[in-house]
Length: 632
Image (cartoon, rainbow, N blue to C red; front, side):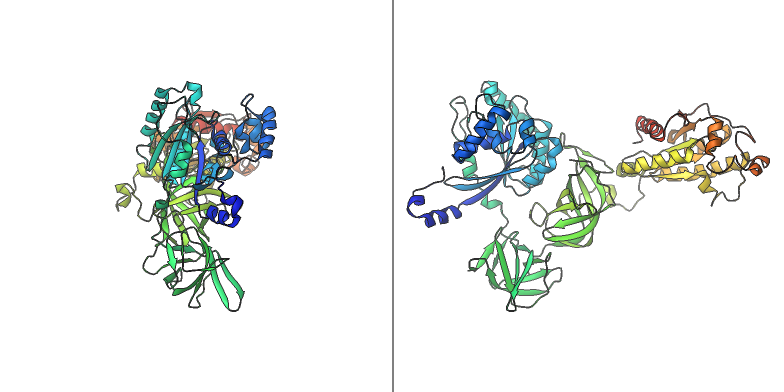
């Protein structure tokens, strides 16, 4: 194997010690579908002679059945182990592979390219120091190329190698390579990408992967393996801010109490003065213990057990820091969130947040904006869908002790967990406690209609369902509210019957009383619209004059009139309020359409025959009308 030395045959212990001291590089491959990520990893393993003979034999035979490379060995099968992956020729789950050379050890993550599995890519990238962005030379920069690049920069990966693959299919043309490099740099000019290196390769044939290609003499840069062996990553670690999240309290006997965990950042030495958060108690480090020995110091990424000189109440989730270097403490933070669930993220909903070893509750208070990964444009959003990325305010039930993600990836990151299913639904990177909000957000003036529209993701409107008693007005009003609510919109129902329990309690049920009830309700609908809400109203509204007056109060541009037009027989059969069944209502003149005429609207925006169409069909027609009006 490529990392073997003469020591392996003469002194195995010395060889193992030498291997243990090698620097470890964690990296991932990402990019769009079928860019060759799995094949590249297979080529790295093959050319560095890190494939066992039985593995090579197995994938050689499997290549005949599942491979896509003709008579050649399909090296992608080394990482695509799931049957579904081999059948479709795609990567679904994150596959990790381990190999080493004489200079360095590697853990490489093969992440999916499909948009459906972007959450898996973000998971694989969370602990990596370097990302290989694969680009198919035939297609150039794709949407997933942009999305994965953006996520990699969000996650603080400072070294990007852009490997432009399948150059053999483009006749190793230098102009193709230069054009793709230009497009990629154009997209990333506004991103904090750190170091970017471009390499033209053919993963299938091995060009510029481990060995330099004889077909691309115009490229004089390093090979991919040379880059991986020599990229400098030591300076990327934070050795200044000591952070030690307590994972476990070790109490094997009466004479020992140790606090176990991994040093997230910084350096700790025996005798250092530490503060325990959140209690604020202080003590000194008595010893630093590992499984094998006691150390004088420990640094980032080392798993150790600390003992203190004083007896302090410390438990899992607490954070040990130096007395003179404390993190930020706040119960409200601003963070960039990558949403990973099919269920929408809704502001105000309670979630669990896992931060280091600490679990706490909280909710996402508001969304400043979501980010279009293609253009990096900021857009208003009332909710977040799968794979969307947004800057949000988050409120916790208890103060959080953190650093900004740019300063410290360990204490600046968290995951979002659904309280009911216990499924991870999002990942967040903390920016701080003083977000860069628009100027009006810091003012003490009135909230403007434009601000409400941007926050709620909707233009306020009143949808008035009108028709005879029993036509289905209240049913559709509540169904519309449910539909809008499930979409993350803000709406409410204004029902004529509910008004009569309060503000219109003094009114009769005759034509005049119903007209006055509608007039009063129109003023409430107008107020709701000014507050940014969509009002789902349900009224008989038997008079054309009363309807016109109500529309003038609300504003014609803010009204959608929906007339429900079933047959009278259908209304009588439904009779939800017992209006038709009671003879007293008829004698009192309280039955619209019988006691007094019902003036059917001739100017309705939508007419629904609710005796022929079901609730879902009717609501879909109303929703389409709202979309056409650009209310949602």
